[in-house]
Length: 422
Image (cartoon, rainbow, N blue to C red; front, side):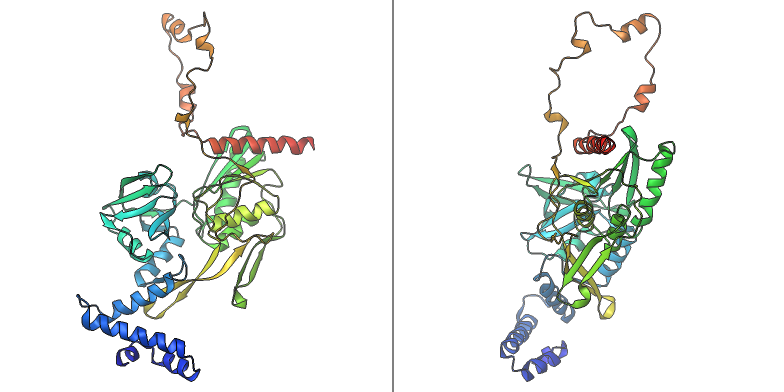
């Protein structure tokens, strides 16, 4: 019992004994013996600090995939991430079946550019097996010096094969909101993660889109939350509030009364009632699901894409002695209609799966070139000593074809036409 007392369990034992809680006392006694045996008999010498930290980590990770122990370095890294700049690969991960599962690669980061995809199972890191490691240990292995390479082996279930992907670590500067004007005066707003800048960035980008639209109000908006792993609850509330006039945005419910909170919208819809389509997929998690669920329940937006990830739990960061901390699940999120997001996700109003262009054979489609006697414009210009202008080529959109986005834009335009007729 001497070693147990040095770890600070003596007071807990006293409380349990006074309460005649024999079962708890027995388990703590077993724990004491296990620690003693490890210290005296394990093949390698283990420090007291490592034993205690591993015990704490084990307690927390056994609760659920999102509760964890945060040593000093992890606490510092997490603070940097919410501020929008940190070092690493640029992926949000969780534990699944004993391996690390990619919730979402953040757009524009090394992992995203290297080809890591939502749903990838990381089974090896630099040729070391991930199975058996805690999430914190796996994340620590992925951290490293900026500019250094890391090799991860992932199993991609959609293709039923393992892939080796080399990623170069870098300082991750997250641009949380991106925008552009699409055809027909439709605005496109992409939120990549919910860091502390999102609320004000949405307002700024909407103003910029109106300027780009020659001062005219947008005919509608596509809000793209695909592969957005989430972030700050306050910014999810701010993003939802930007498009709602009133009503509940989200509520949290837990065992402790102060975890039961309700967040409401304030007056002021920045789109003035114009149609909105929200794009989601399996990489849309947490804060993304709050926004999609709120706009869907209030019938303020139509949700298109595929079912979201289903991460609807609230983690509270608690400071511990020595600048360490712990992430503990303390409540669940509920949409305005009372739906729980946890493990269920948000179901789209219209399911639209991504379409690979290479799967579509357009070679046999009739075209002008297939008609007998068609005019060969390039040959005519060449004979006349002219060439085709490159202006059209310069204007050509070089972005890869995005089937889901195209359907979203079409839907926004259709909703706009319908509302005018109504």
